[in-house]
Image (cartoon, rainbow, N blue to C red; front, side, top):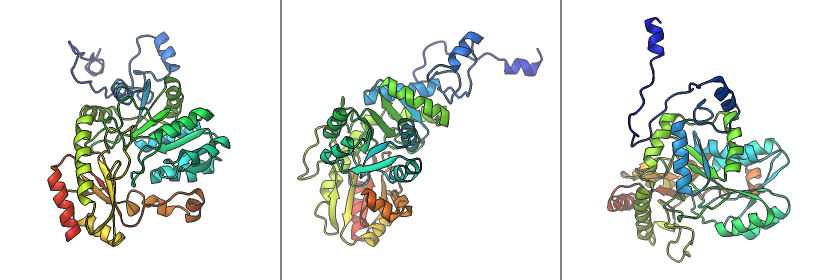
Length: 388
């Protein structure tokens, strides 16, 4: 063989011993040992080493990590949280179906249900996630998929997880839950809030604002069904990003413990501030304890008495908190929810929103996503911004 051919046919170097860290398999294809194996793998469900759009060893390692943390049989990894959400819904819903959806979900999720799925004949009916009695009539009328968030964004409204689960089981409905705001460490170990659990791994799971990703976890049969949709739509995560998230995931519970403790401290200190109308944080003050939560998480919200203009000024005056739209990372972020993370709702038809029962965040609401900086530095940053 000529030199160029010999170069391309150079054998891979395999580790003599098991590596401590999962290697990055940065390859789009994998060489098959023979035609029989190749032909069989072509028809396999979620092969780990054939074509990376269908599966990849580095991504598979991350899937196993997520399943271990969430407590489910299987998981899938996506290039973003929205990819996990939209692929799951497209796999489970058909024209003419009715979905029961929480009235407090992420803005882009709301848009996907009301606008995109609506174009294909899926009917969306909203319910209050804190009051499962509002869900039961929708199930009795034929809703077979229930979608909600454990903690709503940005008001941190706590869902009645047990009540929703009982209602779904009584009517044979499939439940899907976005648990991004309550990752393992916020959610108690052993609590699986729905049949299918979604995370935006861009947030707590990755934890360093360095990679996008999403995950779906649940029973093997349901996950396999959604994998077929994922492979068809091409929603695969690059192995490099999977590796980055995988490393961040190893410190998830350590980070979450510090973020939750700091968030609670800030929530308690901000209560009663003369510029603050209300502080929203799970389990704060007279709010009842939530049995399925191990902590309140690293996000809190505060409504200012002076409204939107004051909220924007405070967000711009912080120096330790960064004016940014995300959450769950090591760096603290502050945002004006109505004009930032939920601004997409402004583009929707107000009559459609009102008819569905969906709501925009209050104009004076700030969402604070706590990182791992010193708690007193974060508190003083907020106090100086409020006083300026």
